[in-house]
Length: 146
Image 1 (cartoon, rainbow, N blue to C red):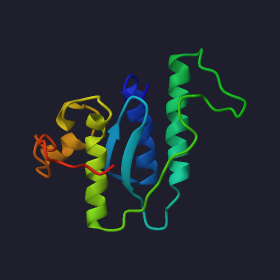
Image 2: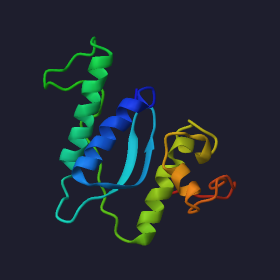
Image 3: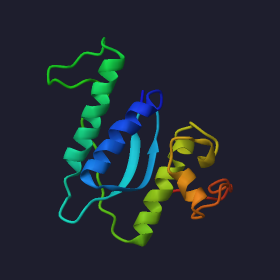
């Protein structure tokens, strides 16, 4: 659903990160999950409420699109998993490892042969900005962290 409704997801995501002044370092949206690296403002470490807002805004858009979607007994639409995982980046190498993991994720899950082939990824921004070559991760000897 996430890539099928990418415009609605982008709208929900952009509105929350703008409202909360969150900088997105890297992101990749796959059909059933997404990964993002954020820089939040000093003193704001409330990832949970930011993700809750993104999920709620996207879910509302999905209900408008498909009124047959129904909520469970907790009032949640079965669009998202209930949990998310967070990790505080420790240093530059840790950041690099996580950016690589995010950008390689569509290949890992069999959605594309190369990161450049997946349209819903910040990989394209990294290429455009000259940070990564467009053939990154194509070499057979590349090892990407799990």
